[in-house]
Amino acid sequence: MSTESSTPYRKEGPNAIVELRRVSKVFARDKEEVRVLDNLDLDIAEGAFEALMGPSGSGKSTLLNLIAGLDRPSSGTARVAGHDLGSMSDGQLAKFRSSTIGFIFQAYNLMPVLTALENVELPLLLTKLNGAERKKRSQTALRIVGLEERMGHYPRQLSGGQEQRVAIARAIVNDPQIIVADEPTGDLDRKSADEILTLMEKLNKEFKKTILMVTHDPQAAERATLTRKLDKGALR
Amino acid sequence: MTLLGVAAKNVLRNKFRTGLTIFGAAIAILAFVLLRTVLTAWNVQIDHAAKDRIGTRHKVTFIMSLPKRYIDTVRGVDGVKEATWASWFGGKDPNDPQNFFASLAVEPETFLKVYDEISVTPDVKERWKTTKQGAVVGDVLARRMGLKVGDKFTMQSAIYPGDYAFEIVGIYTATAKSVDRSQFLFQWDFLNDSLPEKRRDQIGWIVSRIDEPSRSADISAAIDKIFDEKDVQTVTMSERAMNLSFMAMLSAILTALEVVSAIILGIMMMILGNTIAMSVRERTNEYGVLRAVGFLPKHVAMFILGEGLTIGVLAAILGLAISYPVVEKGMGRWLEENMGGMFPYFQIEVQTAVLAAFLSILLAVVASLVPAYRASKLPVTQALRRVG
Image (cartoon, each protein chain N blue to C red):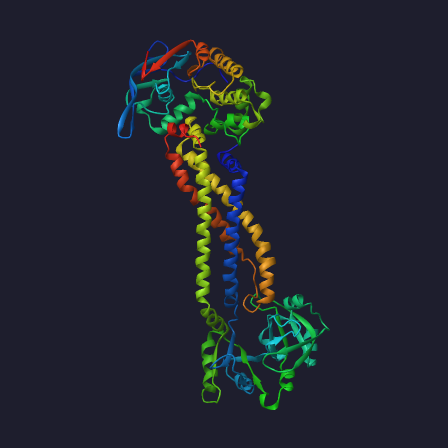
């Protein structure tokens, strides 16, 4: 796994890998329009480790989804790693996600029928790598998160912290530029949460990953280099 | 690791539910195979009827007899190579009157020529011809009743009064599937000689071997024409036509069996569809994760169809594994031994097994289509929010 990103990057702001301009997201609920994000501008510098905080319903996850290419803005432009996400097709977005974004979820979301190694290998099934290469890269990712001894274990045989580490290995196995983490420590005890945050710091500092983390936990937010607060769809 | 491999592993996630589903589908396969085998076994006598064999009976009904002298007339008809006759004896074992089997009084020499698919050794044939009370029995009946060569066996008849003591001189086998291997065959002369004078020289029916199967209708017509002006008229038809006319009486039952087969498959599809839909719903969140990391809707659909395919394959394997012992060794043997006249050969045809396996797989995949479509169309963000 390289420590440098090799993806071409078209800089528009000062080192900004994420640029949102006047981005709004509106959902229709029971014939009513709910404006979750409202004319939001945001730049995230390449190599940053930012925390996003805010009360429930403030739009944190929606913002994360937009940046990760899981959703499109209702209006405005979202440019991530040089890609204008609003103009991309579903297929292009899927390809963008697989090559550029690593996901970490609160509930780990590992497949229980697959071993740690197989869970990590899963995103690589979309690549042209052969079986041996996929295995080698997955082993490397697990080594980075300190789980080389648990490669053959199933999720049920791992602790919560270990499961989240496997999820992190899965997030980095494709060597993405950006890692988005939605409450990565939400289901963990303090000790495990600290270990995960330390690992994320390592990914940011040693492997130069840009990390955007949604969290309710102030202690987690403190580990980020910058904390942004979102309220009623706008950054404060 | 491959996408299909992951799908196959997913099938085993809830082993109990998947096991029950596969077992349920396998039972449906068993029922399907059983019904199809009933149909094919029923048709065996039509499919394997000798094309060069015709039967002549009383014009009114099988039950009424023909004068024995008719056999000589039939043998003289142009195109008839050989003719034999038989009489239904209606014999029963006095010790076990519920034990049904076909018992026929025949003329050994010509009977074995006309029915050359009935196989006996030259030794047995010779002994049968020279032993007036001699009888040969099918290997299936012999096994069922524990009869062996040299045994004495006494029968009573619902048609002919008195006790008839026989000696088993041989066991016959068959070279064709359509032969009832549970018949009891004995010398017609023995029966005829035991009857009072006025009941003698009557036969049940005549079976002829003809030289040219394509002339079957002409020869049949010629035979019947001869007897048209006699006191007893006849009706003659090909063996296949005779079997078909018998089948026609049962056409409603056969149609019902076809319908039940289709219903069983419908039930099987609903069982599979329900299980797959439930498991897909429980895993919507996982499909959301897959989509998030870059998998396309078609990949999600492939996962689900792969699961359906795996279930279908496992159900087919288990269903056929159950079917062979149950249908062939259990029911098949019982039917061949007890209802050999209707089911002389009750075995699973290769085509039936292939059709059952194909339908199991096809229906499992079809049952997965709707869940696969719905899961693949669900927006990623919605799928990620879905829990259970």
